[in-house]
Length: 335
Image 1 (cartoon, rainbow, N blue to C red):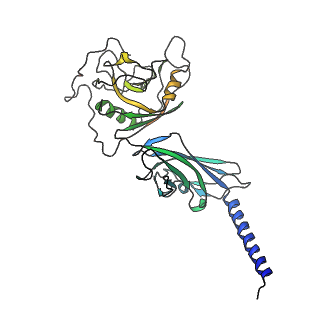
Image 2 (spheres, rainbow, N blue to C red):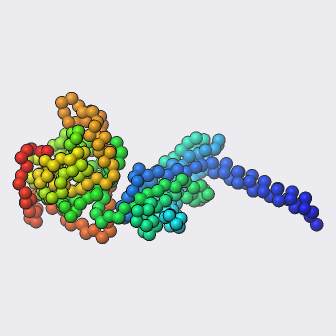
Image 3 (cartoon, rainbow, N blue to C red):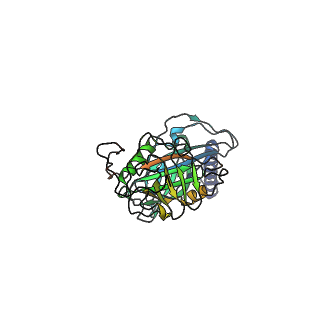
């Protein structure tokens, strides 16, 4: 029969074995995980784009894991204020491969996850956390808050060299312009294009495939002048002297520009990232021009329509169903 001293010794031995075992597993795994999002909020129907970084914090190579281990169906959990969580619906890697990190090395990847409904009440953020599986089981990232906005309009996320800009598209104001913008964005038309025109206290403009303000998508669309005033943050379609000459070039107002009212088609407004547009407008200009002296570009445009939104067909100038705009033509050639 064991006495108290023997039992105490056995208990300590078991605890030490447990600690050593945990440390051994940790040293074999030797990785940490960090997630981040470039946006503070998304529409409740939009995916959240996360950047996940896996780092080897040990003094020896990490165990080998697959890229798919980082982006499985059950890798990101969302929780509300009550801490009750649900798995998000995530994107899968297009290419899968083995990863082994040397000491101090990191690997980063991006993923789009859809937060399930009912996680957080209106106005409250959802907390997102990445959870390791397979070879990375037991590894957890930090938690980040993401606010979910209620919206019934399509959303466009503009990734630029200066940061992110989020637009709410306004089909109730200019349905054809919204469809045109979404169609071009989905084709990747805007990806990589310059901010070719910047005017301080006025607008920043992009969307020209030639990069000089003379390009278009190969067609034009009829104007949809409306009552939305061109105040700071409103987005409009650029055009020439003909009121129905818009195509792909668009601008963001970085100050109130009421002289544009009823002369240009307003079709969106900035929800997040107005400071980015303002920063672009303050970039140095090439001497005697409105062209930036630095390489400022739209890197990527992604659009997300709400599930209940019915997308009308795109109307181009010359189509039988197109109608002329009910407004007077502009007084000048371009803005």
